[in-house]
Length: 314
Image (cartoon, rainbow, N blue to C red; front, side, top):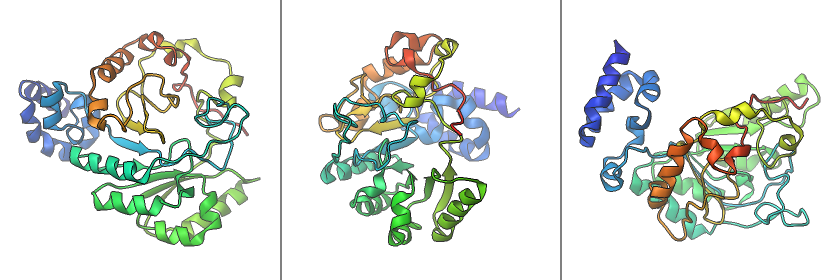
């Protein structure tokens, strides 16, 4: 019954974009069904002004990453930055690059997100450790004042060295995903997790275990060592319409595998983010990748195995 109703609503809305307003009640009542049956018409990701302006139902991103700094204190073999020598993450001699997105531009992007109607989640790290940037608290407070909420990943190193920062982040950041790396056994792992839990009472805490559950990503040493499954390349891309990814130099990536920004979507120093997201070029690439064999059309995608099951490095 519910499935039939939702399919009828899709036909109802496509005849008149402004009818999307009437779907707000359905999002609350039938939330678990919405993403499967509405797809690009998911109400919280649809803005009528953008449907009319860009003449497409392609939705707004559902999460945004503004990389405020290029630097990370770790050098993990499962991270795409590990093998880089392009000057984006490391120079030709393997030295880490340490550059920052200007404060003015970070605040401007947050203002654009507010004007567009995006409500979060937002994060300031990508292939970097955002909490090492001394401006983090300033940006976090500004984002909160604009109605956004923060969901930040971290390797936890800076938090263990700076208990005061834990107190300042508690309640300011909605969710922290803390990577647990350096433990010898289960007891030591539990002790690390408990240490973080004791310091965050308001912020939601989650944990990742990269050495136990390792996602295979291009640019990592793990990727270069595995045997590839070519059948995965025939599948439609699963990452095509979810994230707005802004690198520390303003370049916009297609997805989390496109750290080199090889698709040339645009730069936030030259265009507004909505112009980049709903550009004809971006929409065409997304449409191609949503089809079977679509990944074979693009050089980067022909080597992408993000669909592979995670590996254990232990």
